[in-house]
Structures are given as C-alpha cells and as structure tokens.
Image (cartoon, rainbow, N blue to C red; front, side):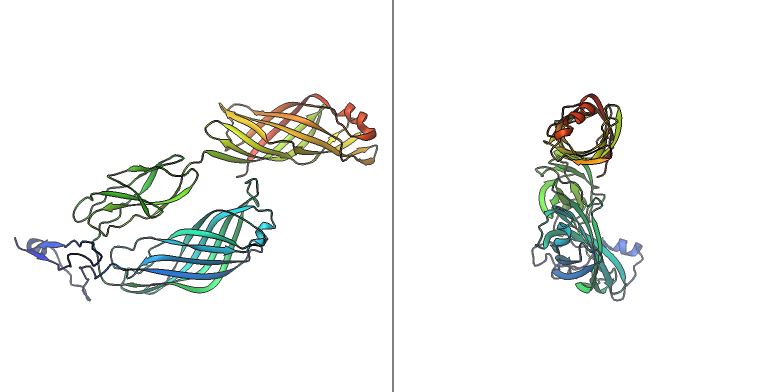
Length: 459
C-alpha cells in the first residue's frame, strides 16, 4: 500500500539524525484528520535551540540577621520552546551573596541551606512558580560577605500555546541551617527570611507551533538503594516511534556517569554528599532527559544532638541538672566521641548551706553503641565557685575536684529517639577551698552518688 511521508531533513546541522513519520493511506482513511489553523509543523527546525539566560536580583529581607541577599544565576533554557514535547528541566548555577556579620554575631560557624526564587510568569497565561537552589555547608567569617555556590533546576515555564513567555524573579526566600563550631545547630531553628525585590527579568521564551518526536524521557525515575559510595536507580522503560532505545545513560550533576541497559548502580561517589541524578534513553539523538532527583549518599559517621535533663543525687540530696550532648558516631564500629556539658546548678552542703557547682569537661567524652546500649564516659571538672553558709556568701573560684561520670542506657536505646541514661559515681575530695575545705569535704565527696538523665534529640 502506498505511504504518505511528512518531509523532514535527514539530519540537523549539528549531525543529529531526524526520524520521519510515515502514515499509510489506510491509516489516513481510518483516522479523522483535523486541519489546524495555522497548521502544526511536523518537521524539525534547522536547529534545536537553547539559550543561556542569566539574571541578577538583589532582595531586601525582613530578618534583621540577614538584611539582604544578592542572587546571580543562569540556566541554558530551551528557546524556542515547542508545543511538544514539554521543555526539559535545565540546570541553574550561580551564586548567592549574603552579609555575614549578623550571622557571625550569633556564634554561627557554618551555614548551608536553600535559596528559593519566587517567579512571575506572564504571556498567554499568567501564573506564579518557584524554584529552589541548594548550597553546601560554607564557613562564616565575620567582616566578609558570605558567597555561596547555588545549584538547582528550572522548570518548564513556557506556555503550551504558541507565543511569548516571560519569567521574572519577584522575591527570594532563605532557609539557612546554621551551626556552631561543634556542628550543633545554632540557632536551633536556623534562619528563615522572606526577601522582596523589584521584578527582575530572567527569561524570554518563544513557543513555536512545532511538535517534535524525540524519544521520551523515562518516567518513574526513582532511587532503590543508597550506600556510602553508591546510589541504585530504577525507571520505567521508555519507547519511541522506533520502539525501545539501545540503552540508557545515567547522568550525575548533568554529566554522563555510565551507560546501562536498565536499572543500575552509580558507584564511586563520596560519602554524605548530595548529587543531582537523571536518566535518558540512547537512540538516534535528541532523547529527552528525566526530571532530576537530588539524592544524598549515606555517611560513614552520624552526629547526634541531645538536650540532657535529670538529677544528680549527692549524699542523698537530689539536684536538678540540665545540659547538652553533641556526639559523632562511627557507624562501622559503633564508637563515638562526644562533648557533654552541664549548666551550673546548686547542691546541698548538708545542713550547713549550699554550693554553686559549675561543670566543665576535662577531655572529649567517649563511648559505644553496641547491642542497643549507649554508653558515655565523661570526666568533668566540678568547681564550687560560690558557697552560702549561714546566710553568708563566699567566693571560692579555685575550689574544685574531678569526677568520672560513666553513663549507660538500658537495652533498646535508639540515638534517633533518645532515652534514659544513668550512672553511679564517686566524688573525690575538693582542693583549694581555703577555710571551707574541711566543711566541703565533709558534706559533698564520697561514693554511691547517682545520675539519672533523659536524652532528648533536638536535631
């Protein structure tokens, strides 16, 4: 039977071969054909176009800690866009600049997080969208602007009708994870700020009336496994006009990492590192890439942050105590090193008065997490910096001793959930207490003292 053929060039100027659609006369007879006005172009243009589109926007923020942010980014956008297929998500790179003095004044050592661009899209339709850019942990230095490299992906902003589409940046939202030098979150809730800017033109996209027949992007792209140095991916098989592809390419940060025949594993990655991954079919050229996934490999270590609340019982007298535990655990061995601190508290000096106890860790605490039991061995310097005896206050800045605190949980402790830890400990004699040395050593030191603490994770 005779066949009708839509004329197309055999290849594009860049060498990408072009597939031609063929329809038999019987197919045309059986199908109801609607003539579009203007007619839809069914052949590829002289070139598949893209254009680097930059934007710079300076926004004023509502948060007094971060008063402003300057964003300078660009993306290689499909232009012109087409009635079909929908434009790919394209990688955005650039920088965000923030003043650092307000952040550093809080005691922040590093910051990481997200910069979300608020967008206004106008053209055939008007609507609003946003795109989120990510940046890794970056040191904060007082007196220097904080300049971070941001990465994200632009969505499909072009209209599904032919004509012009314009994309403006109208605002910048910040979500910052701020940390102290010991990596503990500080402030604990981080910093969020809504920042406004006059509209800054980013993209001008023309949608033409063409429909192209590229091999489609594989859908249902997903992660099925993650280790410290690998990510296993899967997706639904894709089919074009010529049937299934020759294979697939997995892209890491938009660079081809491997060529495979189906679901596979990307190896050689760094622990505890974020990667953008996507997949595309391999055929005759022009294949579409899947939407990207931002995935993170597992770490070799885990850091846990706890508030500690409970009591010390010394010579039968209970004293409320509060503190904080920051620990880093080797996931392979279950061992950890930790920083355990306690807030000052008052203890009884028998019936004679009270002492103001201050605690400072002498060395890094250590412990294990084995068989569901979590242990912490901490050595603390305890200073009775001030005592009150018969209503008189006496300052004793050097009156101190050193106490070993061997904390242990019961079974089934989960560091992600927290729980109870306890210890029995001995208080050695105090020294450098002047005329009150005998009184203090009569009322405080000894064995059989107990600690009962509740560990509550806060991050």
